[in-house]
Length: 183
Image 1: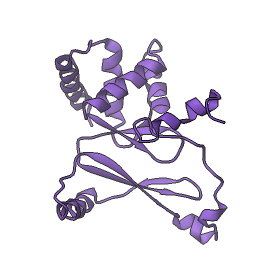
Image 2: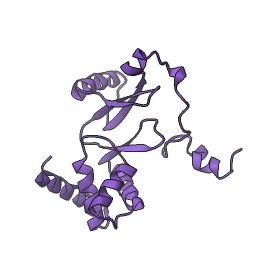
Image 3: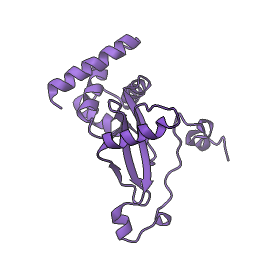
Image 4: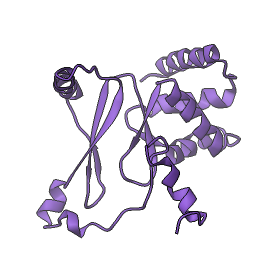
């Protein structure tokens, strides 16, 4: 994506924020432009904050995080959880993004030919009267390298306990457990 395209799309997103009643700050502009420059892959808040910090050291982690949550609420981004213990964000311009994660080594791969896969998913859910909305789908499996090495899912070390902030188990999330509210 060229610099002009990034600026043009950033302006469109900033206009949507303005219409929602959000303040338009230079920090938000930098966050959105950096997000667009890295639109090829899903980004974590920490990774994006580091890239934004390189451009403007005054932009804090909390500002990046809050901006991403606002963009998610506006359906500009969608949040995905690949079992890494943190969320990633993907621009939701296209319909469905499909990732597969190795349960043994944790490698994450974005599947190709998304349009063809999305068409199959659309037909599948249409059988039950549904239509798809932009989202990220995570599949689990064991990668070729782990299979060749003879590793199995049972060989994987248990990952960190976490919950999705919007998930149905919200009251039982890690934060509350670590505060001693659950034994």
